[in-house]
Image (tube, rainbow over all chains, first blue to last red; front, side, top):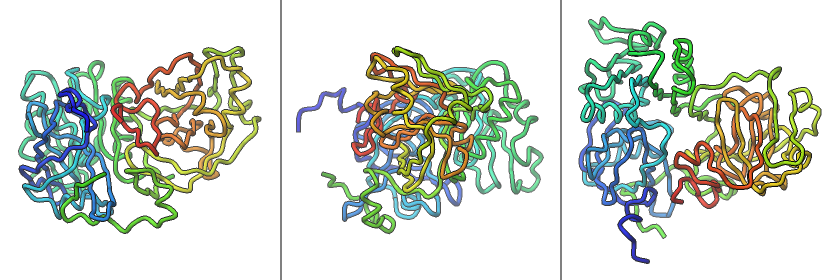
Length: 244
Length: 203
């Protein structure tokens, strides 16, 4: 194998073997995995890594997962993985992976759904769509805490809240199915009122919307009606497939 | 090639051989049709829709929806492969071959920028757009192409990753050089051949 220069070693795209250093259970379906990387490089909040699983017979499965951590966490990344029952990579992470395990990953990738310091920022997340948005929140809290950034986070029920212990005054929750007892905040799907309350400005800045396709469609529709221009709305969609 | 084994990973039931042969490396079979769009879904109406071929051409061309509907229509059975790892096998689209459209404009360059309502762009070599490899499609599996999948019309280039098959397509600009489009500027490969797993810049 030819000698590699340090620059090439750090280039995104090389498969590398990371080591799981800690696992945090976020919800019954979701865990966060801290992974130490020998060829770690700084990412932009919102970027993703590819994960590849290999079976003894050579069979492989690849998926992409958003980075949840700030690039200030040098040498490691956090991937928060939502278990999809009909998936094959996320159930493996949920059922099999323990601290100390090695996992094959490459990244960080793509530079569109990324936050580069634009503000004010409105983050709108549905379910595990909050993961790349949390990378933005965490990075902003550690670098520019005064910068206006608000998260609107839609979950089904209290047990589905990812990063529950990190949602402060800069986050607004709404429960679409069952709010916790005594909850006096928002209920139901994200609506005009919630957008108006959460956006520090509807006529400037940028919005990041991430979630299932249905969630993103309805949330971006609300933002457009509220006065956001399409060019200032970046979206990332995943999960249940649309009808053909 | 790959010595690394993921401890305890067996994977799901293997794809039958006849399908596995149609699945590029790193892809999995998806029975639905996921939607991936970088921004809000544009609302394009057929009464104002136009498809234009311009740039380095001898004869600029433009079609209205009605004019476009008069062009020879082909049904295109195909497999499609999204860079986010899903593949949809055995689907079909219907529309007009780029081989029908492009010669009318008499292209003078070897590359093209495809542009869309909503501002999306993607770049392709003319070689990847001609020779029975690319279409401007208005139907999916016999129905009008749904808006969320690029309706009323999208490009279809099934031999490349699906981000090249631009939704809400508005035009083809012939270029003398290969200018990276939207995803090609944001980390994805300049050509995007799924069989070579050309996903990202570094592939």
